[in-house]
Length: 190
Image (tube, rainbow, N blue to C red; front, side, top):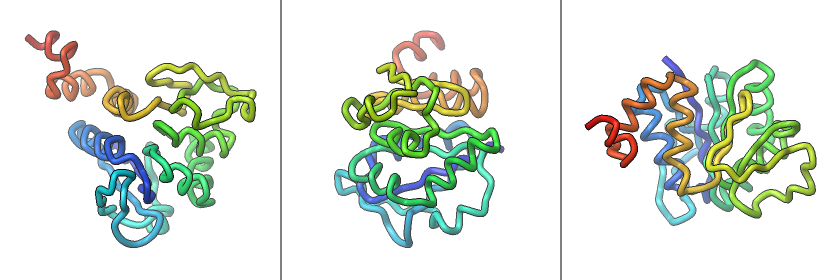
């Protein structure tokens, strides 16, 4: 079974976090959410999220993918935590995937994991001049090797479905998408 770690920081974008958790679990992926510290996380709109574990406890485990939800100041909290950078670099060094949406690609950029890659993010969250080795595309979702990025809350479904396809294949993605009754997927089923 594929395993995914989703670190949750105060100020994360709840629509992104919950969409990722929900769709990955629908696809049969084991999702572990980890708070940067003990206790509930207060998301950007005040929603309380209760992580499965703490980041310290999750650090010794192996995950097929680490996914960072965006939102501010959540992405800033992730970016300020050296454990997150260590975890992300370790994932890529071991040929495992990392993914980030909205403002969270800034964490990948700070870790220099976007250098020489195509990426996308929420407009204005990364100063492209500071990262001249990154090609920012503006696409809803961008996949470049083991690094997957996405634009924002409106692309969360497409991002989660891309993660499912990466982990479980196109058939599982199609099954999950059809059950959501998205117009293009629902038409293909009927």
